[in-house]
Image (cartoon, rainbow, N blue to C red; front, side, top):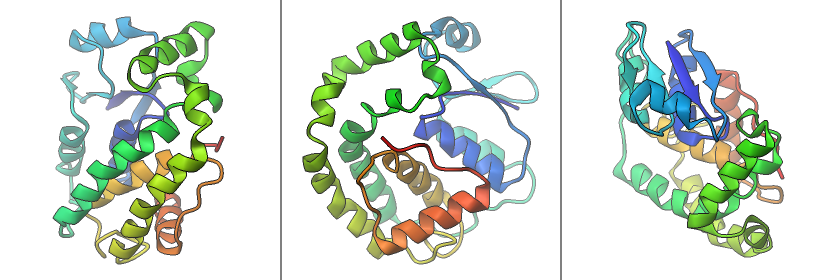
Length: 212
């Protein structure tokens, strides 16, 4: 299987995470942010991630990809799911985006390898989030707004090995978001969140992204 992805993309990381948990080979192909031609050539529109299955057919929607890979061989996401975890993830995305989006271009990631790719990302996100430097100037305030959500998650985590005690789709929701917010220098995870993040990242063999 081939995954067309951005290194910073939390939805892409969902797919990378399940492949690692299942110990299944996954060819990762990082697309430059301005390379819309590759995406359009594969699926007729600009969208990431894109999973090319072994039969060459593309899949969209990260959770559909996760379910497809989970269905190959013995399952690993066998634990229960909790609606409060899904609710937490939905709320955390909105609060974390102003922190993470303006930092990704500072990390030397391959999707921004050319000036044109970097400029494309900056212009694309400006429409939604505004000026990156202005956003970064409000880091302290944004961290204070996100901190209660991290404390809430700290109270929800049942084990460092799985958010609900046994691996489930909830781990696919939570870990990629934590990987994203970990790029924020000066942001501290509560104890159980930190233990969970470090344990799970070690388990799947991924290092955190740099912080800025």
